[in-house]
Length: 403
Image 1 (cartoon, rainbow, N blue to C red):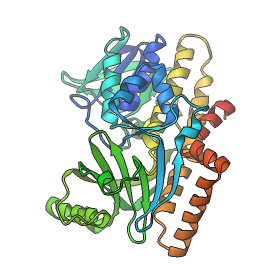
Image 2: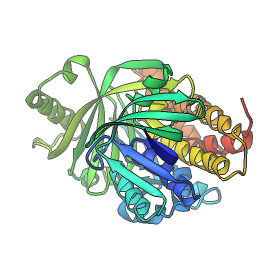
Image 3: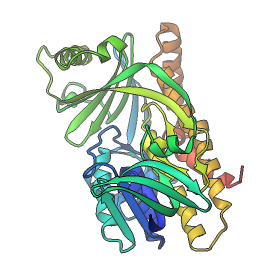
């Protein structure tokens, strides 16, 4: 059995790399095991909220990320027929954060930056093609079974972080339940280079568009637009050619051009609202999608995972460096689960309910409420705090209590 000094991080995505860099900067030895041969080019998330940028700034990657992305300082709620219903200017947050905007850039850009920084750290080892297949707790250690290019090996570490995604091997191995639901509808995610702003000059970079009929989300990223639609079970099982036809029909209902849209990517995603019963078991911890899943409306899933990583990295560091006893690690499990359940999951579920409302009277009532909120300076400010994740982050800082 091989011994690992410090913390073993399972999963080399954005969440795992963030916790690794946070630990390394605090002098904690870190080993990262990733089952793939290199960074996975994931494009499922493209939004970074102000608190996330503040955390990334402490790690020295925020400015480079901003240079690669687009600043979205306005969020629009639109109607398919009437256009803009309400617009919220995130600039009202200028006294609350140095980043009063959403940054739009694909998550892969952050993974590249984090990996580059980690490779400059002397106390970090990153191993690709190392797939963790089992995890066991033994006294004050965690033992991981790993498939490596040299065969199956066992590694023993003082602490282990499971940041290995929705199907987390770590979570399954620890026997931690993943409570919640899977939505019956799936989401059709597409990328296009079509210039929507030439047809809709008042269009923001972040747009939530409700019916009548079908809703959709329209997000700008560097060089492309990301368009998300709801889809049926039957549509989600269509072959590639049929799905392509479905995509073109959906786009024509957004703006009828009579010409095929240039589609760079199309994919179907199952949508969950789930949370781990516990974020900690012994000296093993869960973070990111391994700990919580939510629908993507609002762009809070990846951000919440980064917040997990930052909190866990901070607490593991002070324990490792003898600045606090082990009990501080329980506050990570309590605080982050509380924020996921009481803020992220509730807000994203509400976002879905609002945009997908099919009762016309209820939909119009919600639109009028949003319009009045946007017109009221105080209410608009409070709404901006909530959708930017600042409100939930502040609550975490204010609580700091043990379960």
